[in-house]
Image (cartoon, rainbow, N blue to C red; front, top):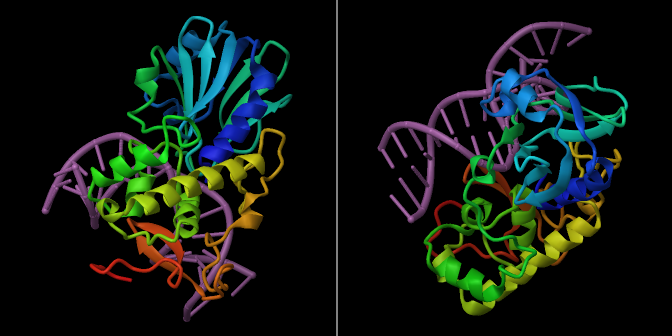
Length: 277
DNA sequence: CAAGACTCCTGACGGC
DNA sequence: TGCCGTCAGGAGTCTT
């Protein structure tokens, strides 16, 4: 499932492919992908528009257009982007024909993804927390933010309005790296622990971006069609039943906030006021 | 404010 | 072999 590193990789590769290209036609095979607009509205808004900039915010990709409007997209579980001479790719939901004869294709097996046109960015992006790889995110901020809430770490870190871009994989990896239990309550962290968590989040994400993200199923591939490589460095995600790479203890899997959660119970000690372990 | 339930979707997978 | 129930999961919405 694409998170910050995967979307960042896609955006970086997409940028040189489509910046400067003009949309000459659109085809929509699943209207709900448009996020509420009709096919006619979508077509009228896009045909003739030129892509001026491609960037990322949280797990969203954004295409700025030459009339000041935007395409805001989200890959959710199974979305993929292609730049292809072929408009009809498997599970294609929306395709934009470009002026160089190629097509920007949004494909999405599970149809959870979005590829929407919006007049203003605020119409497409919800309230989002700071970007963990930017300066607005640091240990001091994180510590204050954690202490101002009273939530278990895992659901808090998954909350995009708290921190932008983390998903199930990188939260599990970051918590393990910082030796913090997913159910640990945010306001109980000592400053040193917040520091470790901030460092872990940055290090994990930066390393994953450097390796073009994680591919452990058939879903995520780069624009060039290649898998990422960070899955080879997973410490806990998907490793339940296998030995901890730090201490050898068996990696456990539990349910936290309705999400499969992987951890080492020896490295990540349960909080004293535990619910279920 | 926090947290759980529910919804959207389909392919993969386990059980029989 | 084949059918069927279950699961996975990001994020919005609704309820407790």
